[in-house]
Structures are given as C-alpha cells and as structure tokens.
Length: 128
Length: 252
Image 1: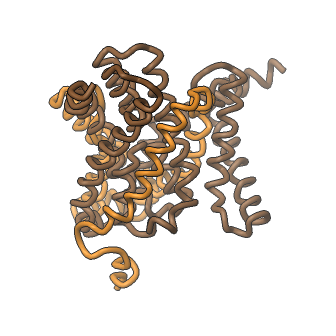
Image 2: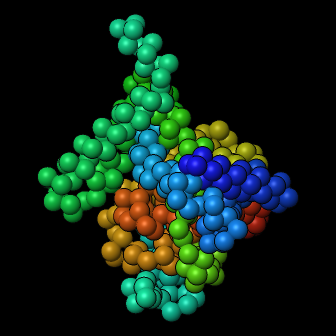
Image 3: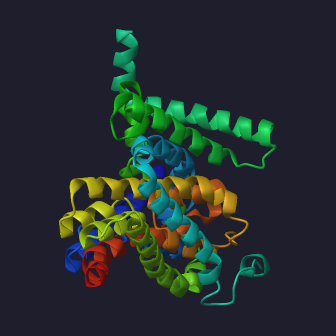
C-alpha cells in the first residue's frame, strides 16, 4: 500500500520535528534545532533496516519516492514565495552583507571538504 | 471573472500544481533549446520563480512573493515550510549510512565554521557602514547567517526594528544568491560528491538556498546538503544572542 510509505515518511518528519523543538527548548533557543536533519536520519535508518522492509519496498516505497520526486517542483514554488522585493529594498548594506557571506562561504567549501576522511573521488572509485 | 476566481481560490493548491508544472515544462524546454542543457532546467525554473516572486511582491506589497496574488495563493502552501520539509526528508530515502559517516565530522565542523564566518563577514560590513552599537552590529551579522537568525537575535538583544529589517534583507540576499549561484560555482568548489555537499550545506546553512541550489546542481546531492543545513539555523540562534553578542559587546 502506497500510504504505508507516506505514513512512514510522515512519522519520521513528526518525530524529528518533536525532537528538534525539544532540543530548542532545552538549549533555550527560539528555533527548531535540526528537526529535519533528525527526521532524515530516521528515514535513512528505516530504509536501511530489515524491520521496516514492508514499509519501504514495492508500492509503499513508491509512496516515498513520489514525494522525493516532488522535491524540485516544491522548491520552485518555494522560490516563488520568497520575499524578493524586500531583499531588493534592503539597500547596499543588506546586499553587501549577503553577498560577502556567500562568497566567503563558497570559498571555504573546498577547504573544509578536505577535512576528515580521504577526499572526493570515493564516489566514483567506491561504486563497486 | 467571478467564476474563475471562485474556482481558482477554492482549489488553490491544485492550481499551484498546474502552474508549477507548466513553469517547469517551460524551463526544461528553454534549457534544452537555448542553452543546450548547459544550464539545468530546474535552475531556470527557480530563477523564474524568484522573478515572479519579485513582481508579486511589488504588485501586492505582501511578503510572500507571488503567493500574495489571490489566484496563486496555493503557491504559498505548496512552497511553504511544511511541504518543503516533507519533500526534503523524502530525498533521504535511499541514502546510505556509510556516506553520512564519511563526512560526519567535516559536516559538524562546517556548521560552526559557517555560522561564525557569515556572522563575522556580516558584522564587518555593518561596521564599514558606520554602525558602532553592539546590538546593531550583532543583529546585522546574525542576518548574514540566515534571515531567521537575524530577527531572533535582534529581538533577544533589543535591536531596533530598522536594524532587524535590514538583517532579514541581508539573509534574503544570501538565500537568493545561494539558490542562483550554486549551480554556477559548483564545478569550481568541487561540489560533486556527498562529502562536499554536506560541507556545503553546513557552510551555507540557509535551508531554502541550499535546497534550491543543490536541486539545480545535482538532485542526488540534496539529502546530504539538506541534512547539515537544517542544523545551521538552530546553531545560529544559539550562538547569535549569546557568545557572538558578548564578543561584539566586548569590542564596541
């Protein structure tokens, strides 16, 4: 049943959000701390485990794949509801602050990517 | 006219599906014909979305872009936080744990590095523009972290409304630039594997920016970048009104 996969996805999101909100309260922060990331971990665990096989295979799996495939359309809708007019109205200070933060962060991607385990190419070579 | 309005408003989410579908079809058509696939169709679709958001915002004076146009209200629901998060989590389906572990440490470091670097850059720009009051400098720096961290920090430390608005604008500029710029710079910053995608998500942090930027670069990288990016705003809200504000206060 397709709805089993959709339900599994929903439960992962709700659990993740509950934990994220709780973390926010514990840390005294007015924000959800990593709720979506935690929900993603739950789904990764569920889809890599045998216990949840009946919720992630065949028709149930296609219920999850549907929402995964709807991701780009949803992102396009998200772009269309951004407050672009306010960003443009923010003036030079907002423009400079935003642009400079992005440029410096872009530049750091290759630097930090080299941290940790052997870099890059694992994807191509490690495909076997 | 009344009939059209009634039907469109009553079925606004369905209208959104149709409008977004047509936009994406058009974008892939343009990507194919005009750029011969050099620019990804979804990058064009996102750019069209942002353009529409600008005109929607100017025309209605609202703050949710094209979703403030009555006939297109469903775009607000379809592109809102609930659907976005649901779809982001779905992209994690099929991700292998081993890939996450490989980049785990670098991912965590990148979240903290990203918050601090963006903050410092934003605060420095505020100082260059002549701000000398610690609350204002901190709030604008926090805005350069994300447009959520800016107002959360500003309200916590008592910044003025004008400064809080500026911080939101700085965060919006960042988010939009990440959406548009990521596919353009991806090759130069080695953004082509799960590990660098996790670092990228942690450094940029704006969930919308990372979500759209990676979608337009390579949809396979989305779950990795999104995973770290979703921790970023929380870390920013944690550090902004506390340690970062204390450090700025000590200097100004």
